[in-house]
Image (cartoon, rainbow, N blue to C red; front, side, top):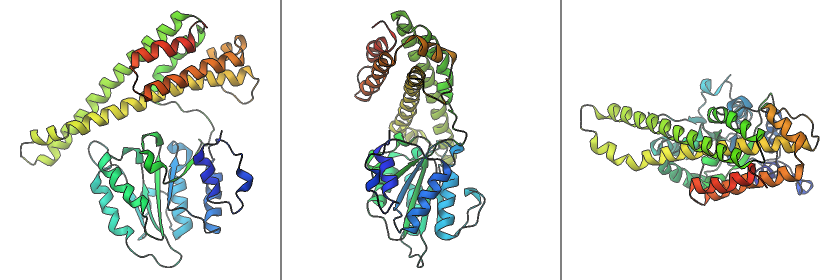
Length: 348
């Protein structure tokens, strides 16, 4: 299905948008996205902010470079090689790999400059999901009242980590991988064997309980690893700024921020694990309905599709959606999984 973001992406560049009133969710190829931006430029309908969502392999950075080339005639083979007086690139620079408020403040004077007729001031923010809360709030003011002749491009693999107020002020374009293949994140790769076992035993409560145990164990391991990595990064950053002074107060001041960083990454990985469960059942639904061009992530998906009806699979898939909603409302994690995973994988 098309999301509202994709509807907006088509509306902003199409002079006659009425034919898109029934559009549904999709991800664009790099070539399709380039054509949309070119059409928007030709029809004088360029937005002031674009959100390019997708893996680097999908071409998000290439699309950002294409926009800069199209609007300002930039000449570069990559964003790293992009040097133009009307282009700025912001990326995570601190030891904790966050975009800080100082990084946002450096672009504010640039955005207030006046561009020549027919040119555009372009700011490209890479790994935009790494922006911290202070920087995000400062950046929101720029999005709310953008200076004229300005285009801000946010590039991210995890748009869900951005503030909803930022998302609502951008035209979002999701890009799909060039090879149209499915690329699992590291935590999804680690979780796939447990998913396969649960799919093989779907319909038995013991399979659902085993999946719950595997899910929570992997989450605990990931939280510990994330905590160690971020705390180590904060200590390294403290050393870098200390210059021989006592950094204990600084580290204490960073405690809330560090905790928030850990929680953000933890929740992102938990969401990726839920996405994998939805994807596995979704592939089984497509196969059960004799869909074409489905490459199952594991053999258990194809076997499940041969012995389970589409209506039953749809019902089980809705239990995963309900689990995601429960967790978003901060229902106790283990209790929510007890209930919903039994609905998704246990006896009906």
